[in-house]
Amino acid sequence: MPPCDSSSMMQELDSVLAQLADESRPIRSIDIFPLSDLARERLVDFEAAWHALSASRRLELVGEMVEQAEANIHFNFHAVLRMLLHDSEAQVRRLAVEGLWEDEKTNLIPPLISLLHGDPAAEVRATAAISLGRYILLGVLGDIKEEPALSAERALLQAWSRVGEVTEVRRRALESLAYGSTSGLNEMIRHAYYDDDAAMRQSAVFAMGRTTDARWSRFVLEELQSYEPAMRFEAAQAAGEMGLKVAVQPLIQRLDDADASVRQAAVAALGKIGGPAAKRALQALLQLDDEVLVQAAEDALDELSFGSGAETDSLLGLAKSGPVKGTSSDDLDDLDEDWESSVADDLDGDDELDFEDDFELSDDDLDWHGDDEDDDDDARDDEDEF
Image (cartoon, rainbow, N blue to C red; front, side, top):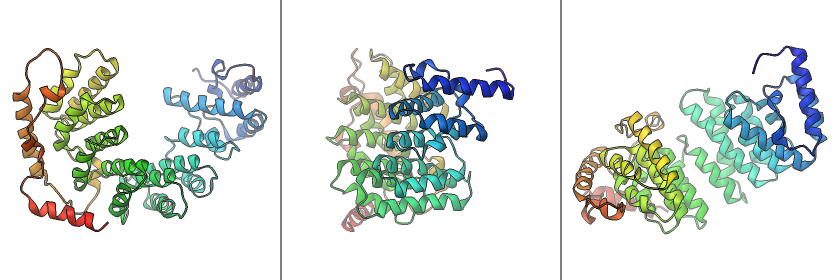
């Protein structure tokens, strides 16, 4: 869009506000670009026009702003969305938080904490918990100072521990805390994993993956065989986040999963983990008629090529410290090589793809614990604590 002088910009904004006031006109037919990068002095005008709109119109508008900002990097509605954090409608507040995902200024942390602790709507508190997680990540990466990241962490810990807080908020707090190395995080994940609520258990597996800690490998592998599609989905994602080479074969089996979202998660995970077996399975998918899965396979192959499939430790994993329990990296590398060789030999050469048959490995290959009785004993000791 060509540059405009101040007078022209004011006229454009006035025109947009007038069009928004006409609620017979669909939001999608209105060019809302003048609301992008709105100057502080014009926020007053927008706020006055905003409060004159009906609740449904406000919801439609904020949804459109969030959608357009995701689709066009030139749209920045942060100033407006920050104002909408105080709207009377919970759905508007939730969408405003979601729309501020790329706003990394630390002065957004206090409003998000306020929503997490005090908003009457659980969906808003949960969304605030998700949003605060990125500040823990930014702190881990050294992109923001330590204190703002710690303030986000403390708020999330309080939400996790709050008596009477709903599961949705607590599980989102746990997922966000998994970005860092919060004291007691492993115990929190374990408690969540054995929770009676299925959604909490799924978040536990999600958090396992986000920690990139190999101690959770066995849990992730087991959940790849879960009878719950949602749990298989989370386990597939976790395996990819962890760069879990030992999960390549179970993930290949999930390419035949009855649930489409699990199949797509398995594809993405194979692209992140890499290796000859993963690459071969992804290339085989390109023969299918499923356009969604083919596109996912192409994306995964692109990522595999970009990363060369050689790195098993993510930047986050390298940023953390502390002992890793369970299977050693050497054990995983040796097992991965055995599997890759076995996969190459087990292709039956038929014309139809059947990942259960074409990529099947023996039961011995799936016994990834091997003979390391000490590791098994440690794992059982950990479980006994809970």
